[in-house]
Image (cartoon, rainbow, N blue to C red; front, top):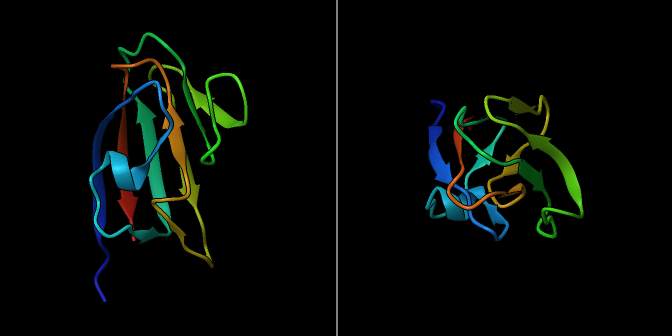
Length: 99
């Protein structure tokens, strides 16, 4: 079976949004690898976490302009409903995933 590559730019809002919603995926995608990079021109912090993440609570991590992080699972799959992003409205992240 061939791998599926998915992703694209995501403009952040003041509400936490997962990758399924922000990338307009239907249905959600199960993946083994995803790379997220914050746009170098961002003015604020990008926070990520579960569905209860806010800019002040429940963060699992953050990205400043130009920063990146990768999720790489060797023996399991996550899905695009699992990780949420929130930040300064208008700031952007870029997502590249492989399922």
